[in-house]
Image (cartoon, rainbow, N blue to C red; front, side, top):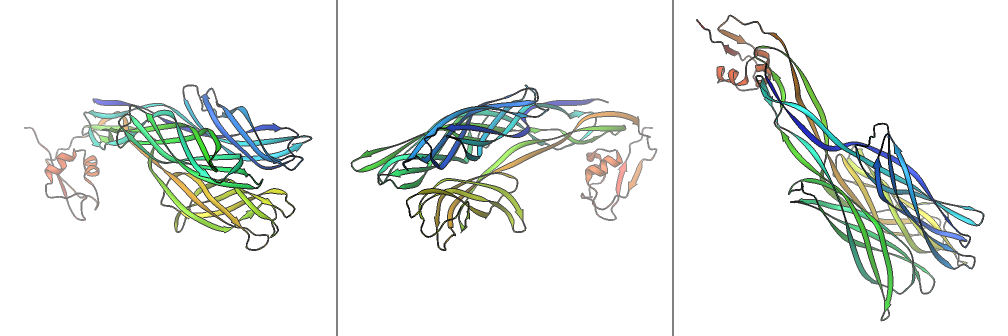
Length: 488
């Protein structure tokens, strides 16, 4: 028995890991009371080894605080870090791609020093090569079902985004935070284009020594060269803000804010390959035993975006009362996950921010506020990102805060390519030859052409040729006739 096989070689995502690490930073004794604390992390690399992935980068810490004289001040520091994500399946032949986010920032005082600890969450995708053989021809009767398999092509690049806008006169920019989100990715010949927006949030000290906060949505565009990219290719891109330079200039009684962002982008183009293989096979002469290759290839579908204004009672980290004045809402962030409900898919999460409050005696303090939300989305299996902007707070009843925010939910559809093909055939004993020139077979209602042909050990073409009036799948009571040529 002669069989023909082909080999498909691909490169794709083999495994995903998650890890956490804590990075600590010390500030000196000049810090009397911390009002807000922020941390931003950026990776500079990730390497796969034996049983582990080592990733490294830098965390930038910033604080707004009061000193002993009740002056509002700011301070910044950078701390380099290196950490390990362990997994016994990791080998040096794999390629590691990692992304990092700050999950939490905590503050503690020890003596005259103040320590900030940032809890970093890191997601690692491991890519590697894979190959398999599939039956493509030979002496067998094949049930050909072309299937799609995917090859991933990693790519990356960098870009800058700039913005300039006018605001009220400021004394100093105390703190800023940036959140980047990709809204769309398209491929052209040899090029991947990603578009999105950066939510810039600024906390500033006004000339009268009061606090103010404001936001700005800055669009960005990243173009990444990638030779395998073509029109219609599926692709994904993750964009991170590596550095942000924000400064203010006064001119003719106006204040202009200049913002410049350094961006890095990690992308992946998914090339579809159509394999002309066999989903099933049999011999008309002998018994056969089939082996199958079964696998799943990851891809990406559409990008979707949902924007909704949410409101409700906020959860508070501390008390407020009517003698407090609300001066700024800053360090806005959000987290969400997809939840399947009876009404459909929803993105459920919490929008959070630091509310800076000034009491009747002039003292500042920060109250953390959280606003739960649930937003209907049109999605199945998708990776979810969320951005919150325009968050406001007011006190209608003493001790309670009514909050509002605009929540932007970004969905990246996950796509899976399932492959099941005959990979090998083992030959068994020959069939006993029938002496009958004609056989009549009564099939079950609903039997298809392939199932009947395999059962009768005849090619589908022979079965159709002998039964030109039968439509498949067959109906109840129909008969299938098989003719055999006899040599005299």
